[in-house]
Image (cartoon, rainbow, N blue to C red; front, side):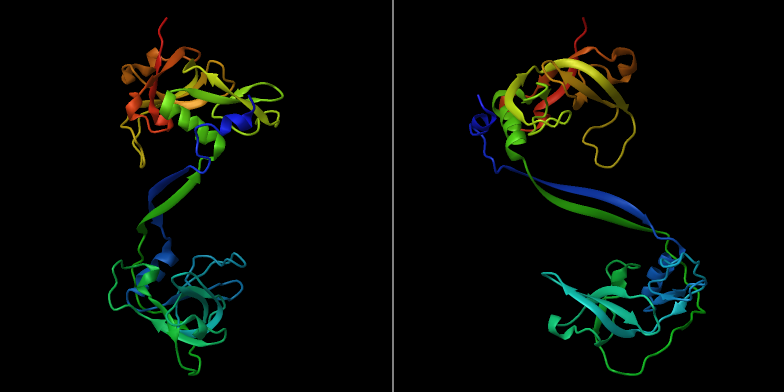
Length: 314
């Protein structure tokens, strides 16, 4: 049976996996950036001067990005400047602003109509009435059209501001990942038949799990789907004892690489069904393992339809 004919049976080729990844971070700001952000809470915009090329840099940095020179001391920058570039998204208009006396542009939001954000237009800082999260770039709301008043020069900053050292942050990513015909067929078989399939290389005849379009050893196209066993050999394993963000299991647990009988590739999955605290004594490379499946009516078409691979003690 051809691969094409196999793909057309019982699987929606446009199946999509929708997931959201949330990754909390703690960002370390550094002295200059930390002071710049803290100063925004006081409606002060800080820059620095490179001691080598003498460029005035905004936002304040510890080192010059152009020549690598060290920046010492802070400058209190004017709140006015000129638009040097503009773009827009569906929701906001962004501009580059060359603050008066600066040599580097500052990127921020333009408060006004896109048509008004002309290159060369004069703008002034716009400060928020309420700051939900202090010591952020949003402590400066952005810039709005200003007057054509004469430029004001930066001046040395003589005050004292305690820099913030860390910023809690969370990156959220929404994904829509197309299964494609090969993964789609594999997940369909897992959910409906508790069956593991791979694709056979047309040249070396290795069976690849998960199935794919091309062999990653000889690069020939695959031509057939082949059943593989839900049992195999443990090729490698790691015992996880540490907790970290994003874990779906509570340590300790074991990840293993399993080469299923009839397959030439490794499948990464959980190893379980025994006292995990004795994993070092129980597990060995090359030992046989077998899949322990969830009840068929609980299978959803993911690798989690297999709860874990259990060692077979002979």
